[in-house]
Length: 204
Image 1 (cartoon, rainbow, N blue to C red):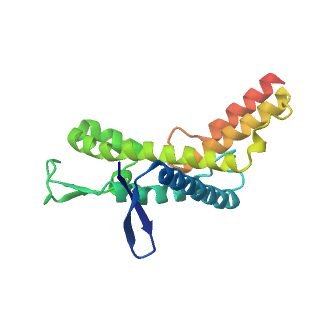
Image 2: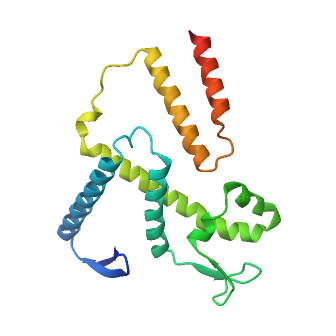
Image 3: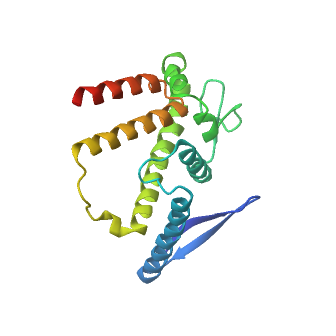
C-alpha cells in the first residue's frame, strides 16, 4: 500500500512542494522518527528564545509563532473568492484569505452575526478551523519543549499555601496584561490589581 504525504519546504522567496512516498511501515517509522527529531530542534530553539514559555506564553511570542502557523495553514487551505452576496464564485470580488478573516476583532466578528450573517459564516469558516489548528500546534510545541527535559516532570516540594497564592496571583496579572495586549476588552489591569489586593488582604 502506497501513500503520498505532501511536504512543503519554505524559503524567503519561494515555497517548494515535494512528495514524500511512504510505501511500507519500516519507512513510515523512519520518517516519523525524523519528524519527532525536527520538532525537538524547533522546541529547543523556542525554549532558548523564551526560557519561561512553559510558565506563560508572552503575547509577542505567541503572535510570532501564530504568524508561522498561519503561513502553513494558508498553504494547506488556499484562499477562496466570493461574490457580493458572499456566495462562492471563482471570479468574485471578495477574496477571503486567512489574514482577512483574522483582521476582524472578536467584537467586529460577533457583530457580523446580526448585520451580515452569510459573511459571518464565511469568515467563521476560516477563523474557527485556524484557531483550532493553531491551538493544537501550540500544545504540540509546548509538549515537545517539556520533553526536552523529562526530569522536570518529577514532583518537587509542594509550596505552602501562601507561596502558591503568590504564584497564582502573578500568573493572573501576567495573563491579564497579555489578554489586554491582544485586544481583549474584558481584561482590565487596574480592576485586576484591585481585586488581587483585596483577596490578599482578606486571607491574611
